[in-house]
Image (cartoon, rainbow, N blue to C red; front, side, top):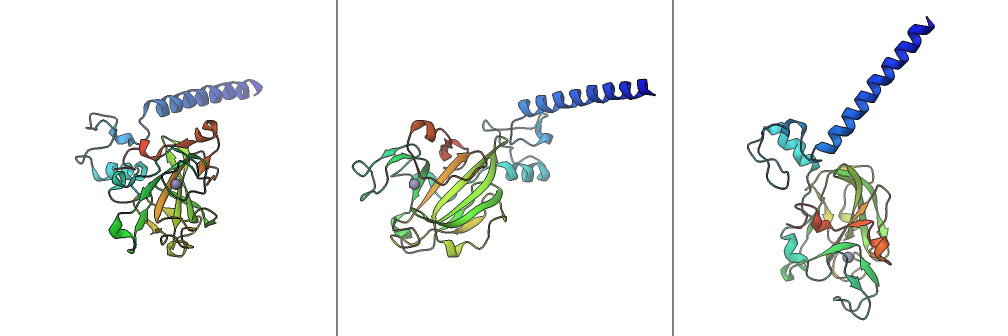
Length: 233
Ligand SMILES: [Zn+2]
């Protein structure tokens, strides 16, 4: 009886070890956003996105993992504070400036004809809302938990009109889904800032909404949103 138990235990451990090795190998080899059905001869473009000839279920899997821009013409809006720029009250492209440090996100500006219109901000990724609150420096800020290359990240959306966000912490947002509206320029809805979106992407699952890092080491905990495919299209 004792022998059987020992043999069973050895077999179980061997099977578990094999399973773990296979799982590890699989996660290393698979492109993170590629659906499992896409490992054959299906066409992919250079960024790993599935072409439109994929079956419908593969496309919807892909959409769950892919990122989207928050605003239309996103790349044209990055005219003042890109990711990583060092600003101080003396040198900032935005005057007057009250902040100092390395910009942890990317600022997306409005076009002149958008000053008095409602500008919807969309989720860049799919995931749950971790935080929705007022914060000094932003007014409305929303933090969303997502994954990038199978690693947890948080997306930080700053200067939103808090009252326009119908969903709450714990609710899911899909990539491309409207979160709410940009706060009104130079008002309590932006904590006195110009009308724009501050978008940050922080490594890990912990919430950090700081808009400026005080060292390069601190900045290394942040990801340039424009380094993620589609976010700054
Ligand atoms: Zn910013």
